[in-house]
Image (cartoon, rainbow, N blue to C red; front, side, top):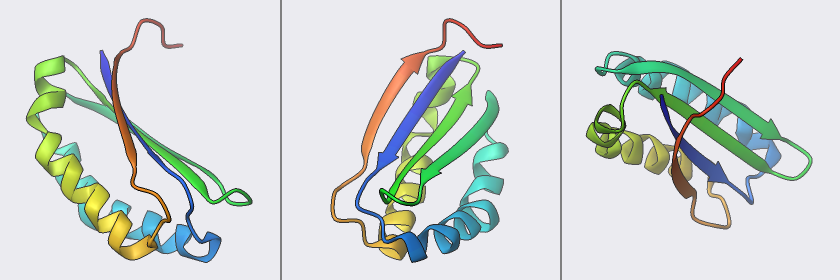
Length: 98
């Protein structure tokens, strides 16, 4: 399994809930329909204005095939939230999951 990790910093705390709602209602349904989709996790630290979104994929090819869709989701989050920094995106092979 493979994971795309998108980290956001400098988020205004009052904008976190609207970002999550937008992601759940507008971007996530399209992401879930992509071949190889295995799940998603969104975590936040409201006090620090940080968030991390992780999507899981069956293969690296599945993950790479959704790069443009993921970039559009990040762009929407940036537009809604106005973070002070650009998101950081990383890709990993998942070696252990329980």
